[in-house]
Length: 116
Image 1 (tube, helix red, strand yellow):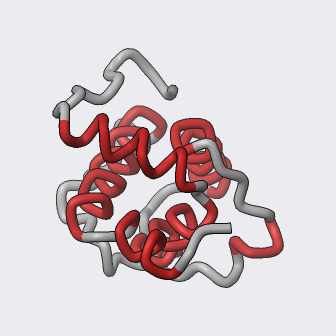
Image 2 (cartoon, helix red, strand yellow):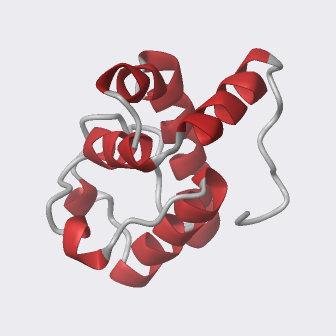
């Protein structure tokens, strides 16, 4: 289990902005007719304008990308994008965080080829 300091580092502004970009990228693939340009960290998940299957597909991509699992029972407790980002950060191990930080420091481009 990671410490509060580790969780804080994983959910800093740069990480949450990167998370938001990843989420927007996948939602645009899943729902090409929707506009996500105004999506922000405080946006309500329920008001994203996507159907539940697209939201679950985006969640699956998030889980795969960050190597975490968010139980269905916890999904109902998440109301905003930042709530989801914080939950993902809280579930990441120290090793996953270090890998993510390394990729961010190296400015690795996100995978643009699809959903993973």
